[in-house]
Length: 119
Image (spheres, rainbow, N blue to C red):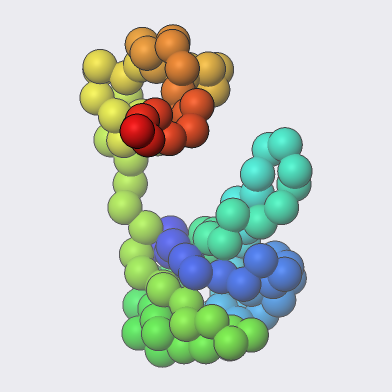
């Protein structure tokens, strides 16, 4: 069973996370998701446990538990459907390459300062 773990402290390492789950049974794999540019943890990861009963027990026991002062979220990972995008956007996704969407002008809130006239 594939298990999602969220709200992880950024300093938790894969070996430490794996150790939490090994108390409940065999762990086939452990992966903390990191930012591809900085290498910093994104605060969530996945554990794969081959025995579903052990995995369900780990989910039940660890969901809502505290790790380094943070309450973690542990639940069964949802399988992505074929062709589903990670962004969550449908076929109308605009932007890409982190260059913004269709609005190319100005940008930002209150850009240019306060435009009210004082008389």
